[in-house]
Amino acid sequence: ELKVEQNPLFLSMQEGKNYTIYCNYSTTSDRLYWYRQDPGKSLESLFVLLSNGAVKQEGRLMASLDTKARLSTLHITAAVHDLSATYFCAVEGIYGNKLVFGAGTILRVKS
Amino acid sequence: GAVVSQHPSWVICKSGTSVKIECRSLDFQATTMFWYRQFPKQSLMLMATSNEGSKATYEQGVEKDKFLINHASLTLSTLTVTSAHPEDSSFYICSPSEPASYGYTFGSGTRLTVV
Image (tube, rainbow over all chains, first blue to last red; front, side):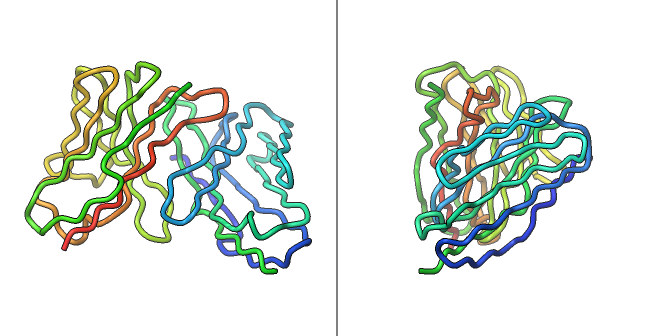
């Protein structure tokens, strides 16, 4: 059974600081997704990582995937208040395309 | 592409009544739709997978008689919460199974409150 562990679950950051969110998964997969969710809203796609070594960047966020270690990271550079949200990683199982979500990381960026 | 419209965005109903949530794919044909449930401050949990023209597949622990899923066409899937109770209060989100290049698309979600 595919399990996805995400940490930390809560992250309080000062503006301008850097930090990394980690996503570990338990079985083989080479498709991993990162999503952002604002309070009361649905999910917004951030990154799609489809192969080992994949690295994608958008603004202050950078995501990477190591399929051998079954680990993905979401790195935040010079955080700003607008990045405050909940971030989820989701892994696609190899049998069918069901997504299994991590628990989510609540990010609060303080001014 | 992959635009999904979900309605209603929120609904309040009395215990014992039924509520229908619609999920429409506006610019593509969704042969399969995933339905998720999200309790406050928790992650998304897959409830069921609906397939056009056939019975839905439910995840373990999800009552199929309580959460009725219909996928009668390639552009419409519905989730009906029957005899709703306060513990069914949650955020329900649909998602077509075909990922776009930017990842899976999600409906805007339905906030159900049962009083």
